[in-house]
Length: 119
Length: 281
Ligand code: SF4
Ligand code: SF4
Image (cartoon, rainbow over all chains, first blue to last red):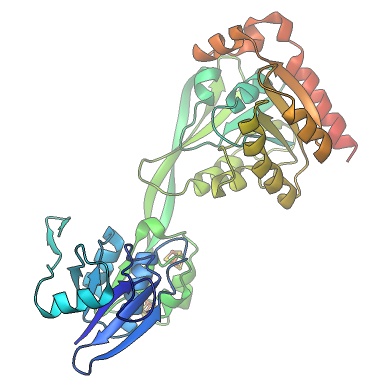
């Protein structure tokens, strides 16, 4: 199981990023091995379609669950097509806190209700 | 000859200038390429225009032929087509209709569907001049295609064509002025007017399009614009004075040089200056 968190810098001490497609980095944690790696979001400066491209990047790194601030409609469609589950990062500010909250089952899944995104 | 009329921001008098050119310069054709907010036709009193739809194409995938090889997604610069786990997703609004993904698909899985993005209206004004304008459908992101087709539909060497361009320096502005022989910047003599104008000057210099300036509402504001033009060696083609009656006529959708005889020669004189300028290049 691999989970990604939008992060400003590298590692678990980093602040989270508030924009998914334009997120500086993604910190990816492999929950089976506890290995943490941070990848640069190469889509962040793309003039168009950054959201969809960022999802493709996560899929390349075999992410199963993406913790996100909120998602635009394109990124949402891409998450579905790449079969990545999305979870709201809520009000947490630090990557490590989000990881703990996720493990404790405190984060809410983003569910789609008739085309609207509800957190 | 194509003459583009542009400005650093909206509301500086582009439409005033274009409409006055249109009625004063014989045999001219005018084009409003501000497809998000066309308004030239209102001033020109256009009678019953003919319209035709403008389409753009976007890819559609035959799932039976696609093996999710990924090439279309690698090719597309706009991330408009993304091969995912079990399907290829297409964001039709992001597609620039370049036709490339079909070329790189090894399995012939891509065909194109068309979608209407707006219309082009063509006809004659109350002043018996030819006029064309485009209108981008609400929610569409780019009017460049409509602008290109607008210019194609009026490609003639015999006429003087005035192109009312979208404000600023966006892709749409570039598309509108791209093949112009000369550009006219309209600006107001205020500090904001000068700073908005600088971007346009930069753009035109990069595009290597010769240009001059028309100062609108001359007499309002300060001297900065004159100093700037002198320092930058920019020709002032003419000035439209700040006159309450002009503003009033504008508010009523009227062309001021028709109603106010003292301005009758203003635009033919400016036009002569443009021809002089072009000749001296
Ligand atoms: S036609 Fe061009 S822009 Fe449109 S999806 Fe294909 S490659 Fe991308
Ligand atoms: S290039 Fe063709 S076969 Fe490959 S993923 Fe795209 S549509 Fe499918």
